[in-house]
Length: 382
Image (spheres, rainbow, N blue to C red):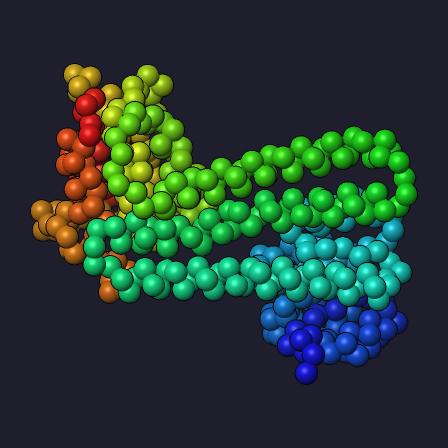
């Protein structure tokens, strides 16, 4: 049985002849094909059948292809969408790629262009699914192995992994689409000067998105590396920026508003950057867990009382901590979370790291009124 037999395609086009010809061609290649004559019917079909790939015409009466693309990417984000455009609709095709379309093909549609776009869509769908499956496996392994303090870092990474996957996948998809677009434009045989302004615009986006991916990956590798404690000067604002970069997507999908207020005159402290960042990430992840319906997270940093050290404060508007639990929250394996959602190592790890740095961690909280954790670091931390 051909590999294509495992793929379902929904074909949306208001022209019956085009639907009939494309359906025959796709079915002959082993695909399961369902078709619809308009955008509304196509969306209903997608919700019923959950196809891996959708091919939609751009110009249709009623709901057009761009609206179909937006709707599918909102309700079925893993579905790949290929848009079919007229040769002169290059601006519409660019708009579709910006909305995360997998590819575009121009009418009249040749089998060669159609199956090339399908192969790309299949590769993209398969790569993303493998990545998400691997992330889920990592998270499950993390939950199943919590016995030593270093395991807390792995747990933090597992909770960050899905967020980082999406954070990297989005710019990479944009980079790939712009490169493909430039290749197609060059393939028309026109001189590069003809496309110079657009190419400069596209290359600027590619450069910025590549730098963004590089920063995320570099930061994640630095955080994940298991090393012996190393004391060196730590730039507090930079450390907070690194932490926010890793957690930003998770905050967005959790509907949590982030406010960061860092005083510009904070001096460096001596400490282990990796361990101190682990403290900040643990507290942010705990705050996210405490706000299942969204809320506000505030990160502040500045000089402590009498300028004797640095204070980093993480405040949430979550469920808070019961008064009876407050004396125990820094004890190893004490957790108020449901089974399978934590083993009670996070706050004990924060406590231990701050103690080794000659500092401390304080908490102010009431049930239903959020929590405020403060990390106090002396100037001679570490």
